[in-house]
Image (cartoon, rainbow, N blue to C red; front, side, top):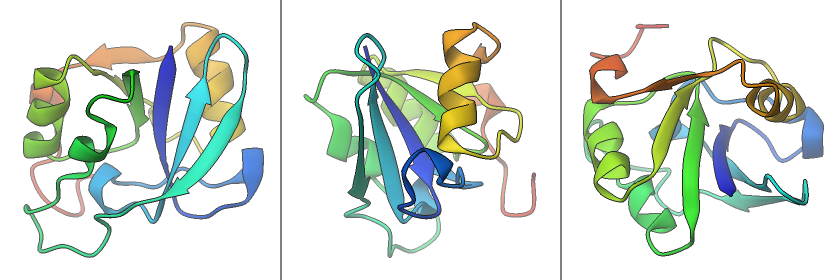
Length: 122
């Protein structure tokens, strides 16, 4: 399965996980079966609050899940409409930690109801 993780930086497995999905400058794209990791830029990083559509960048890519520390309701609903599951990372710090915790089954699957209600929510 392809897993998407929002990142603050492009520093390989040590990249810090971004606090909010739509504001992430980068995304880690992880192939869970092979462990292959690619870091890509967020083509929708600069946006008005509530107007981001990063989920659209993953439509049709085979992404099956995202791991987030925080996500807005619109993005969460869009991901769910695309059949992409959302896992809350509970403030995981690095890409490597997120991958490990996902692989160990430690992350909770969440719905749009777990979305942030505004900045400063985590």
